[in-house]
Image 1 (cartoon, rainbow, N blue to C red):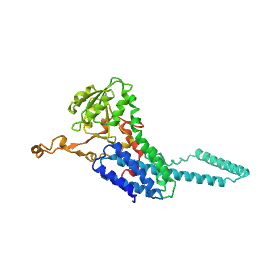
Image 2: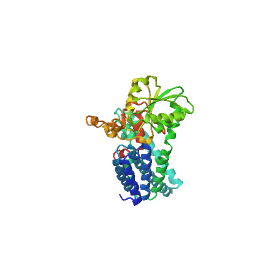
Image 3: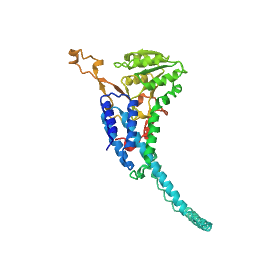
Image 4: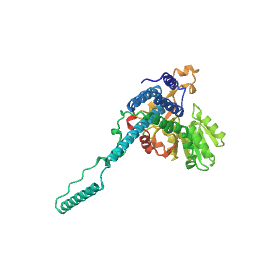
Amino acid sequence: MVLSKALEAHVESFISRLKRRQIVGSYEVAKETAIILRQVVSTTRWSDATVLIQIIKDLGRRLSAAQPKELAVGNIVRRVLKIIKEVVRGELETDDIMGSGTSEESDDGFSDDDEEDNEEDSDREFKSILAQDTEDHTSDAIPARPKLQTESSMFNLLVDQHSDNVDYTAKSYGMKPLIIQEINEEIIADLETVYKGIADQALEHIHANEVIMTIGYSRTVKDFLTKAALKRSFQVIVAETSPTLQGQEMAAALAAVGIETTVITDSAVYAVMSRVNKVVIGAHAVLANGGLVAVTGSQMVAAAAKHHATPVLVCTALYKLSPLFPYDIDLFNVCVTPDQVLSFSEGTLIDKADVQNPYYDFVAPEFVNLFVHNLGSAPPSYVYRLINDNYDSEDTIL
């Protein structure tokens, strides 16, 4: 893979910031990844889709290895690969249609007499077949069982039937502007409107005089509740999310727009949950089984909500959907410095204790009632379908 010097410098800068966690948050990571991949499509030299797909995969592995916890990187890479394959398939189908149309025009030289002769022959053939079928039905022979068609399988209905027939090595020099246009419209433009798409659904889920609980700071949840507060009056309880205290920042942002907000300690979540009508939380990533990776403390809130039969809504964008399964949930977590929990100045105690400060929690799908995304809403059991619509099954492992 040969990148231009300017693009290689941009990639190295992005990788360095990912490794040092100088760029944090799925939105910023996803947007810069999409911009880099658009530049790769635009500036690299390739004559067919196979070369371009390999270039994108190689770069995707580099970016994902820099920060494996940022699943948005791999999601955007898979989305770009899906776009490339769709454009190639569309181009080849267009060429086939144009070719078949040309052949039909060239073969359309029959006279009216020939068409009448063909119709008479067809009538005779049809009558003979009908007479043969009548004789078969009047006989005592048992008709043969019809063969089963594999296309009727439910599994095959979910599989792209055209993927095996596409020749990605075909030369096509008009795909580059189409791919760039699709990346701009389907990914980058979608990222810019993702918060609005989720916030516009707020009035469908937030009702008057409800008590809403949330945890941590999430821009998606903040815009969601702010949009609902324009026409509904409700109260929000925010868990402070110790030791990062993101909940205090969230409470200040909600109070600034006129929402009645109360900050509670994390240990008081279970005691207060009986008064809560709905839990609304954000997500760092949504996995293939419907589980999610969210800010630490989210598992505790979701478990308390399930015990009290309180519905849990997760506000998330489609670019956070990952086709990976949580076989080992610790692989999706990251531990940050424990200085906020136990100061390094307490040296005598640190020598006798092993302190871990996880940044994320894994919330199982049975704790979630509904995902609210930028194109609508879906239960956890429908996540697999959203993943199939956005990614190609061949790109699950980059």
